[in-house]
Length: 91
Image (cartoon, rainbow, N blue to C red):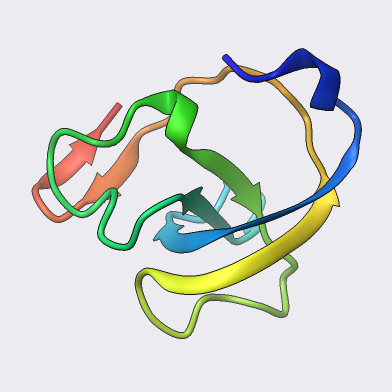
C-alpha cells in the first residue's frame, strides 16, 4: 500500500500520534493516524490510514493521540506489525 511517487521523498504530514512498542533495537515507534482516537479499539484503521514512524530516541509523545506535524523521509514498504489497541494486540 502507499503512493509510490512519494517513496524516498522528504514530506511533511500532520495527524495524531498513537504510541507503539519500541523496535527490538530500542528505537521508539508510533503510528501517525488522521483522526484522534484511531488505534484505540478493535478493529484498527485500514493500513492505508496509518504510517509507522520510527521516532528520534529523544522524543516520545506526551500523551496518546497527541496532534503532531512530522517531516522526514518516507519509505513505502508494506509490513505486517502487531499494534497495541486498548483491547489487546492486533495485526
